[in-house]
Image 1 (spheres, rainbow, N blue to C red):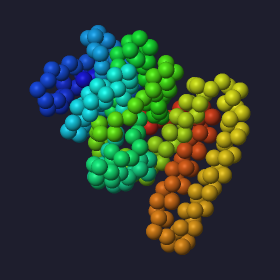
Image 2 (spheres, one colour; image 1 turned 180 degrees about the vertical axis):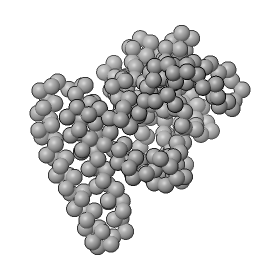
Image 3 (tube, one colour; image 1 turned 135 degrees about the horizontal axis):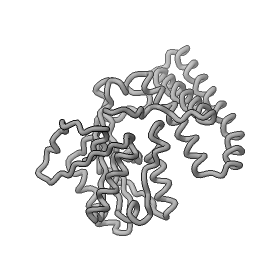
Amino acid sequence: MVENRSEASGALNTIGADIPVRYFLEKQLGLSAARNRVFTEAQKRNADWLALLDDDVVPMDGWLEEYVRAMQSMPDVRLFYGQYWYRFPNGYSLAIERDSDSFEAIIEKPVRFGGGNLLMHESLYGVNGIRFDPRFDACGGEDTDLRHQAAACGVLAVPVPRAVIQEAITARRATLLSGFHRKLDQGVSSFMMLTKYTPPLTVTAGLLVQLPLRFIRLLGDWWRAAQAHILLLEERDKLLDTALASSATFIGVIMGLCGYRGSYYARNDK
């Protein structure tokens, strides 16, 4: 368990299971610093496999057993990822698609790759040196970048649909402002990902083509939302959310192009 603060809080929650727990204080603030400290400590203990969980998720019963079954059935795979089940006790979030209340429906949907529900072999971070990139701390996308790093090493990530964790969307994250902000930072992250893995000349050529196409799609989203509200269609609210999300992402790409690096994951001492 890694606590990411300048000073130890002295008030950690109990783990709730009869297993040994090792605690570490990572004073360098930032999501990547905390997660990378996990890799460092796992290496010191000669761990063969490392399962990653964030502090705001709860694994479903059988979560780890599902990963073990996947390891046993696919012994050559070195990176697995499980399913996220978003719960909305405080309202809908613009940035996150509403999930079903049925577990069976959840495991049937495409599995989302995320840094808070992973199983990694030691060779990825011990031999290949894979780490979370702090450049994405402020805007997200650090998990997608990790997957790119693994792919560059010839390691493909394999989904495990039944390795499910639940994540409750807090009241703050359910606001329209927070959702718009998160989508904006996703646009920034996509631009940063492009510049990290693509030669500058290719980036320039790609933007000259993709930005006009994105803008045309954005206009189409707003046209469909306007039509739905004029005709009072049942899906009008969903189409409006889609248009708002598209707008935020497009603005984020433009802001990233102008040098903005995001602020959704604001660094603080809490």
